[in-house]
Length: 189
Image (cartoon, rainbow, N blue to C red; front, side):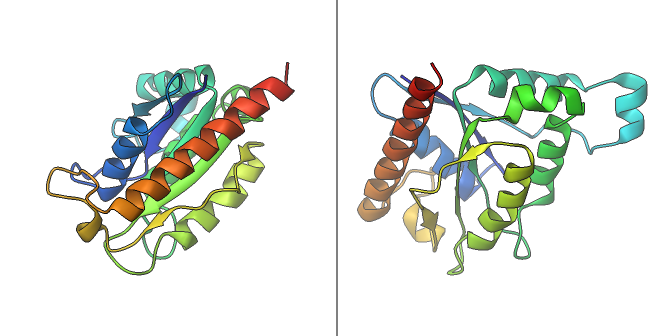
């Protein structure tokens, strides 16, 4: 049984990536769960704010949530051939202070996927996340790959997947990541 925390790298309310995250949460194998969290309330990182006011409450709440989970699923769009600034900003805050970063990230299983309305997939955004995840000491899952192109044809107006092939690939992706998380939990006992 795995409890995975999922975040979307998009703030847009009708985001294809948030829809993909919701679909992942609804296709998780029985006994496990994906709990959707938000980066919407995380302010821009400012070292002066950290020094004078400490970690903002939305950041601390997300840090605690991720630390309490067994794994992390990041669903990200691709902006200008990289990850969105809001996602990188959230990760930067989540890694502060450095002494607490290990609690949130060290050894944590992480999977990355994404959706785009275009044909280019989200490979460059996912690749841009890898050095960051490596630096933070996570355990990225490389066995599954899911990238959703032409997302406007994959999701209906309510954000539900209408493409059976993508739905099947998502279910396999989620199942594979859950198994990876569970296997890591067993090997650490």
